[in-house]
Length: 130
Image 1 (cartoon, one colour):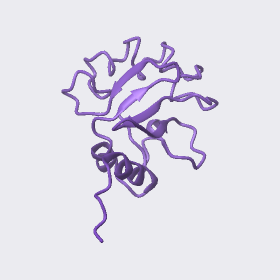
Image 2 (cartoon, rainbow, N blue to C red; image 1 turned 180 degrees about the vertical axis):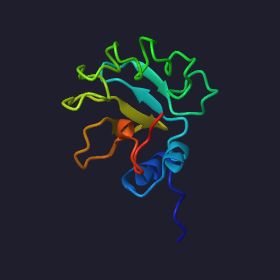
Image 3 (cartoon, rainbow, N blue to C red; image 1 turned 90 degrees about the vertical axis):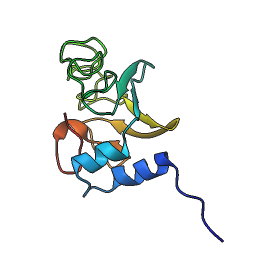
C-alpha cells in the first residue's frame, strides 16, 4: 500500500527537528509560514527579502527595524527582549507561533527547551536568522 505524501507542515516540523539543517534549508522548509503573536497579531511570514510581508524584508511592515508589528523592532512589544510576546524574551511562555498550512509547527524564540522551536535569533547552524 502506498503512503500519502507528507504535508508541507509535517515536512517543516521534520526540518525544524533536524538540528543539522542549514539556515537556507530551514528558510526553504518554512517558506510561506505565518508568524503570529500570542495575542493573535499577524507578524508577517517567512519569505524572500523582496516580499513585503516577509520578516526578512527590511522595507516592509514586518521586517523593518522600527515597524510596530516587526519582531526586529527592539522598542516594540513584538521585538523587545523584555516583552513576553517577543521571540527575543528568554523568559517568555508566550512566544510567537510559526503556522504553516494552518498548523502550528513551532514557536519562534530564543528559549530552546527541546519542544518544537526555531531558535531563530541565535543564528546557529540549526537556527534561522535575518
